[in-house]
Structure formats: C-alpha cells, structure tokens
Image: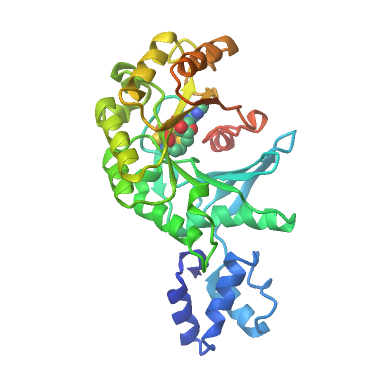
Length: 347
Ligand code: SAH
Ligand code: SF4
C-alpha cells in the first residue's frame, strides 16, 4: 500500500487520474488531510463512499501506531512512543504552555552521533525517517489539538535523531508543513536543532530559510566537548563557531545554543567564561538555552543543582548574553529524548 504522507499533490493527482476520478478530488483529499484534519479516509465525508473505500484499501492513511501514550500528571506533556510500519520505534511529544502548544518530533529511529548523556545516542542508529514519517508526527498532534479547538503554535525538530544527518528528508518534511496548500505552518515557528554538522549548517545558511536554527553546544572547550559529543572530534569548536557566525552573517537570523547542565562537568565558572568568550568579540547574535540534565540510564552524570544553574546564568547575564533556564518537562513520563523507548525495551 502507498503511504498517503509520502505522496505529493501531483502524485496524488496522478493516482486519482488513473482511477478515473475527476481532477478536483486530489485537492479535496489533500485539504482534508492537511487542513481539515481528517483522521482517516472515512472522515472525508464529502467523498463518494466507494472512493473512500478504495482509498482505505489502497492507500495507507497513517503508519504510526502508538505503543505507549503517556500524559504527565499536570497534563502539560503528552508523549507517545510510536511503532513505524517496520516496527522501529520513535518518540514524539506535545507540550502545552499557557497559550501555546509545541510538538517535538523525531527525524531518525535512534541516532548515530553517540552523545554520551543522551538516551537516543545510547541506543545507536536504526534508520532515517522518510519525509512522510516526519510530517505524520506533526499531523497526529495537530489532529488531537483540532478536536479541542486548538492549533499547534510551534514545531521543534529535537526529538530522536540528528536532523542534519537526515537533511533532505527533514527539509522536505519542513517544505510540506509550510506549503500553503498543505499544512501552511509558519516557517518562523519551526526550530531545527543540530549537534553541529558543519557542512549542513553551511547548506542550511545558503538556503536562506525562515526556519530557526539551534545548535547543541554543551561545552566550550574541545576537551570537554570531545568527551560529551564525539562528533566534536570531526567538527571541532573553532570550525563550528565559525560556521555559526557565517550562518548569522548570511541569514541575519539569531542562533540558539543548547546547553544541558551536568553537575560538576560543564556547569562551572570556567566553562561559563569560555562560553562567553566563544560568543563575544564580536558579539554573536544568539540566545543560550540552559537546561539541567535529564539523567539517563547509561550516563552517570546528574542535573546541576539550583545554585550552579544560577551561577552559570549569572556569568552569561553579566556579559550581556541572553540566556534562559528551561524547566525540565514531563520528568514523570520519561519525556527526555529517547527515554520512553529505552523504558519500553527494559520494562
Ligand atoms: N540531534 C539534535 C536534536 C535532538 S536532541 C541535537 O543534538 O541537537 C535535542 C536536544 O536535547 C539537544 O540539545 C540534546 O543535546 C539535548 N539532550 C539530549 N539528551 C539530553 C539529556 N539527557 N538531558 C538534557 N538534554 C538532552
Ligand atoms: Fe543524537 Fe542529538 Fe542525542 Fe546527540 S543529543 S545522540 S545528536 S539525538
């Protein structure tokens, strides 16, 4: 069966043409799928019954099967472990803020980058997701919200996997999501987070997209970054920071740096000052997000204590570097990246 979300509008149009359907049918189905939030072909109530039946028989509406679906006690976070058609598993999350709803989606099953503190890195790489599999995660939550009369406010591509290791599929998914004829989502409300694959940062800069870029830094010296993020040996800090500076110069867009604070590891004054140095002279247009580490099974590090988080932030504040301390979300439902899947395999 053809998966619906793998089809472009011209693809769908030619399938329907082969079936002898009138030309407007493809657009009608497309509209139901991306704008009227149908959850199945049966929901597409103004299609003839026999066409709905044929679509159901010959085109696969969704390939996502929820295996675990958890909502945090405070109802602010809904995390789903999905099985794909080939039984590989991915995680997707929906977070509710006061007046915003943000989804965090995966681009790969597992990840090849091996960052030591990351649950996804600890499980290794299974495979890339296709563009449709990436889009489907967003549509899943968009449909849920639609039922409540709500809409998605933001999409963060920060779930399992390294999006720039699966660049083409990720950006094709972004194109579908932002296409005015499809989901019509604002590119400025999408953020892609990368561990720092320099050639792809350069490519992304050249494409001059409105999509936001986040770079996972976590350390401001090569010794420490090599230890935490092995990819740093291939793309060391100096070259990474130059790529980030080139990105900002080319796109005039602010870059976000991610920093998971690990007690006694990367949360000291020395790292904070080294970070200030990396971001100064001349000052880089950026924002730093610090988040206390979410402890994982295969990494001994702990979240920084409050005092050390404050000290780290104070050093950045004093240097005029915008910095936000993020709260850890959904700890009671293993909402750290990759943690739900690990739990499913080690009950
Ligand atoms: N591969 C991309 C995007 C997915 S990871 C990247 O690395 O940027 C999304 C973010 O979660 C990254 O900033 C990553 O470093 C961070 N992260 C991974 N494991 C974490 C943990 N245990 N605690 C806190 N942040 C973590
Ligand atoms: Fe992969 Fe990102 Fe996890 Fe590193 S932090 S292992 S790049 S998902």
